[in-house]
Length: 123
Image (cartoon, rainbow, N blue to C red; front, side):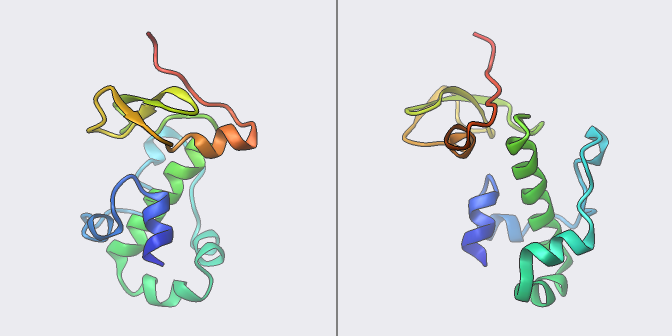
């Protein structure tokens, strides 16, 4: 499971698991569609029972999933405050710490492959 969370998150799974306890929908102030317990249960499948016993892990997964949904809609999550240049996608919004970094692939590559929108930083 940690590999899946790491793929969704903008931080290694170990760091995501140590995230502060937070409501499942930390991005609700942006009026994004809320994840329900049932949606998370269907995504996590058999792993839901184990993860649900650790509220901080479930919250970390919910935040990562919410970020993924925003990216799939072509919206940069609010914490994407840096910019980077992807070898395939060009200039993109990135999580903090990627000051004008050059990437071999990025968080937006899935959108490019699926023909979904990629928001661009202003030049």
